[in-house]
Amino acid sequence: MTRHELVHQIHSKKSYLCVGLDTDITKIPKYLLSASDPVFEFNKQIIDATKDFCVSYKINTAFYEALGLKGWEAMQKTVGYIPSSHFKIADAKRGDIGNTSTQYAKAFFEAMDFDAVTVAPYMGEDSVKPFLEYKSKWAIVLGLTSNAGAKDFELQKSGDEYLYEKVLTTVSRWGTTENLMFVIGATQADEFVNIRKLIPDHFYLVPGVGAQGGSLKDISEKAMNKDCGILVNVSRAVIYASTGEDFAEKAAEVAKEYRDEMNRYLKS
Image (tube, rainbow, N blue to C red; front, top):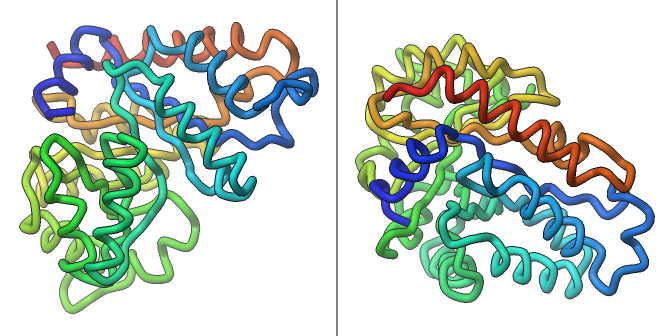
């Protein structure tokens, strides 16, 4: 998916919501466990219920890898079921030496047809470049994350700047605003003003809203640019809005609430 196509979807739907399919088989409604593929059945109903209110889905691959072959099959079926109008993210946090990253890129962009994959940048340019060589595909590089451990490295000074600042400014030169995004955690809201000065035109994938306590209002006010420039990921607050048989209906209600709030912040 191109940047133009993504921006068009955002303004058409008045939404920059990304629904995280962090599907934990121990948390889905019990009645689904009798299905031939419980994870896919859960995802299918969530997608059907929320697709009108979001522009993207993010699959956290760890929840699928943990199930072995059946998990990989559920993931591939889920990717195939997501409408082509939606931006499909593999939250895989890959990043290795160049020839290994080349295989990761091939796996997620060719074998499974994701639009984007999250990438760890700490092995340097050659570990990221293979993800940037695909037309209309994206690398989403870890910038400033929402977890408590961000203080261990990302928020440590490297000379006169924080390490995350060095990562953002350095990595931004490896690609373009057409194929490179950054993960910026919603729980780091106070840093968004500075981050927009460092990389004003890139899109940010913003986790941490919802169950992790990030404020959609704060993020929207501080991080949005002329193209919107943000995808706000919400996982648990949407997909686990109910643990009963009405889980899809409740997910739709929560996704709509997020969409309606986003509509108020979105710049025309």
